[in-house]
Image (cartoon, rainbow, N blue to C red; front, side, top):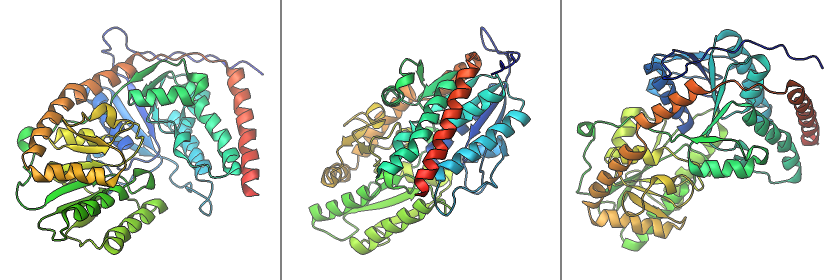
Amino acid sequence: MPKQPKQPKQPGPRGGGDSKLRVVFLHPDLGLGGAEKLIVEAATALKEKGHDVKIYTSHYDRKRCFEGTKDLDVHVAGDFLPRSLFGQFHIVFALLRAIWLSFYACLHSGAQVFVTDQIAVYNICLRMLCSQPIVFYCHFPDQLLTQRPSFFKYLYRLPFDYLEELGTGVADSVLVNSEFTASVFRKTFRWLKNTRLEVVYPAIALPPLKSIQKRSRTGPSTFVSINRYERKKNIALVLHALAAIRNLLAKKDDQHGAKLVIAGGYDARVKENVEVYNELRTLAYDTYGFSEKQVTFMRSFSDSEKASLISTAAAVLYTPEGEHFGIVPIEAMAYQTPVIAINSGGPKETVEHKETGFLCSTDATEWARYMMELMKDPSKPDTMGKKGRKRVERLFSAEAFQSKFHKAVTTTEYRSSSWGRIMIVLVVAAFGIVLALVLRSH
């Protein structure tokens, strides 16, 4: 195999990092999720530092995005490619869209540094085409987010898992969003267990205290759930908890109970979003018989609506289990609102039990009791909320996030690789994908 010709190393800042760079982000879908919020904040932070920042994505809808994206230089490539074939092969087409985006960005962006996340195949494509440094932000190993109900599904996923580990290892610098994710990373990617990981907590811009709406101390307490309409978010738990409150109080009058607002990112193109939304409405209105005054559903809300929901709530209910970080609890505490979350994953690092909120099991009755504790003492949400705000200022400020992210981007250097080894691995991986597709078709 002929040797890959050496490409000139791109100049990067040294010392104080004062040099300005052309930084290009690659992200699959610039929608309304936590990963998208992090990318927008990182891009904005680098832009404010004077860098030339661009975001390349496979899909961008200006009607369903964070407001911050409208002030950024966003480029779309490959959106004409389908997401699946007859409802199958989602991961295959996700990779095809990623490959197209990688090639397009490499050819047209003029990047000096690439920042990628979610899809590690970006890194493989970029490394094949250029020698610019790659910073990869690992939200969580993708292979752990997929169900494998059968042996054939296991075989089908195997080559993609291999590609994910390879792609992650190709990056010149790897960032993770929590110590929990770092521990899972090392257990999952065994070949990369000695990889140096930098924990960069996601952060939010702290809202001015004067802008935070005050919650009412009279009438029913309002609880808010903010998550995408996905099954893994376990949103049904908040409805079970509300039903448990009704049973514990033995009252169905909504003037003496609690109200619940379920708000989440929703995309009509995503089958799971549609299914989960309808399932939750059926559970709320048909199974439990709640009225629309007691339970309200919202889809794809604005930033101002979200701020109002959080700041006026007695608590934000965060139901995902084993979540790698979770930005919603941080947002809630920034708005001086307590958080009730499952005692696992990221919330164990972000929420201080009985100080800034409550950490509990998945038992609905336990959730109900903590919710009732806040309902019975209207001053408690304010007291816990103020402690939460101080915790965010200390540990999860935008300044801390911006400083760490900026350092990673401006100090990461290209690491030369053994091209022969990489190409062999790619050939083996390609063969594995073909084999998996054949098995899948049978």
